[in-house]
Length: 241
Image 1: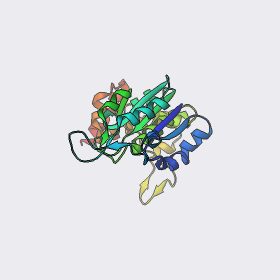
Image 2: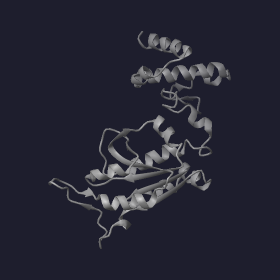
Image 3: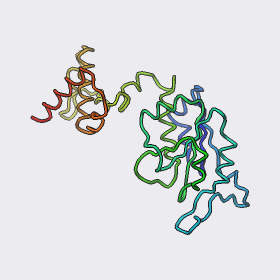
Image 4: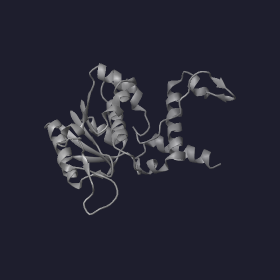
């Protein structure tokens, strides 16, 4: 997969592409990330890319002609052009998995007061990472890129992402490591038993418990299996004693 990120602040991405899992994914040629400075498409002497809003108002608005040139010069027939904006589709694990099906993503980072409205017609999709406003789309672009790349083949071990929160409609079960006992807090005995059937049951039940306590809205959307229904009943009884 190739990810192109159109931004006014390319320096913000230096650490993102040069550290940890993203760096290794690039080195293994699982993905390619290209950071593109929108300012280079500005025809103005000082490379301005924004202007005051028509009709008046606070802030500055990104010009449609400049962003259009940046998008047109970087998209291909295989590209999915995405605007990072608080007005977009709420981002989710399902959407991240859907995006892995594309050969190329073009992520456009807004800034200042936002996009000229005509820019929306140049994109295939708009994505929001939450109901709040940031100073720009750079952090959301990193979040989308990170969440998509880790799902690509060979980016990380497949089993590492299979039980992630939201991957099966539930929050992830609690994890433990050494020391077995620490300040009166012990690793559950079942995890030390070697009985994989019981371990799997414990983890599924605790995943359901965590979801029931923290995100009950997810349970309302999920079609539970017979085993999950039984475990949910157990959890409800235990939590409402």
